[in-house]
Length: 83
Image 1 (spheres, rainbow, N blue to C red):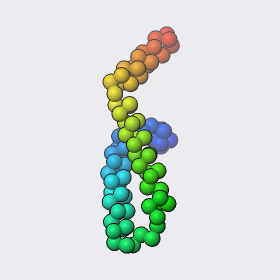
Image 2 (image 1 turned 120 degrees about the vertical axis):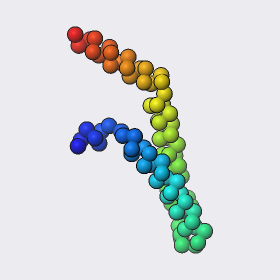
Image 3 (image 1 turned 180 degrees about the horizontal axis):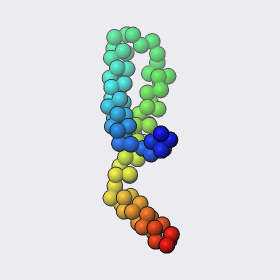
């Protein structure tokens, strides 16, 4: 169970990509209906957007061919060094 918490799974990333636009839609809808009495700045929406952009940036790096090549090269070097 601990190993599952330490390794990022693609399922959790995809769930976040669906959850983020959904929460934005609900927030905007609540503002339009007048149900939200909170300021836009105090809602933490800007931090959500920053985290979303950071996750997109991480996804782009981790899915790149260069990163996969570096990881494979490091694994081969560790295997050869262990001999």
